[in-house]
Image (cartoon, rainbow, N blue to C red; front, side, top):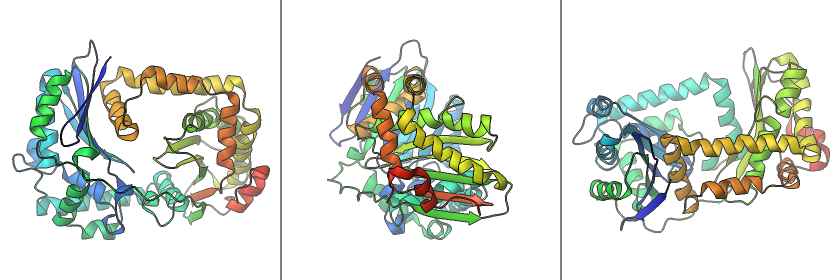
Length: 424
């Protein structure tokens, strides 16, 4: 594999990685614009724009977009995140030109037809309603809003019914012009691709992309912590407990990830073994570590019946606290192995690899080599990983819960349980 990068005069970057013995290609456009880039009156626009990109251009109807890509055996999709939005296709090697033509068409020449817009707003309202009916999704929205209150990072990606209903063609067009610019976009292509050919094609098809002016930096995230509980008549309580983590730019990033993997990343982890296997206090429990450009979140999710909450939470918290003191070399080896498999698996899949290299280019301005990624994981000491966990637990707790939540521990009780970690 040999990663190649070319930057066009507009600032748009093209990154490719040709993969031998692969007969398909994954191509996409990743944009450094997500829900966190939205002003208050734009909340939900990143996601709406992603939906509307597939609803027709001056050359293609919505049906024609789907028909053309599927007639070639390919597929086309998109996803909106907190700090990035992605549009991607997977096709046979011979159809890379078609994929790039469709991707450029939907990103540079969409019509945002009024009727299509009203229909798609209705679809998104249904999507928002579906989250409200899915407590294991909704609890994370509540968790984010509590961890980062009154700021874009804490807002739900989908937006609100009121906000989405009020958007119009001008709203979408203005957001597109402000955020989808040469310097904010990366075209990634992997698999059966040839770099110079991709560059030539992209230069022609994305010729209308303008150079990005200097963009103002995002406001610094302000982690707060706190509590949000929603009482509902459900069979289970859905609980998320978390703490401030670190940025993916931080030298501690990999240590935080390995700590999360060790305490709750698999069936052999402490949380799974102590909470589920030994005590039967939950069906589902796992730890997570999310990293953003300037902050992060580390914590755990659990779903359990009302009668088991009082037993589950102290056990789970004790697992986290104890791991900062007695996490073993064997546990760390398992966690590192999990992380290495996750990192290296992307090298074997065109889709995962194109996402990996495009996101790295946006985040770091370069693509990390396999050797560098593995070295960063392997170079972590047991003390580094314990220290990462201790650093997170010293921050104020964030607690979000839905269901029969009367016995969910408050942040004050969590701080007391964690003892010497502070959290004030």
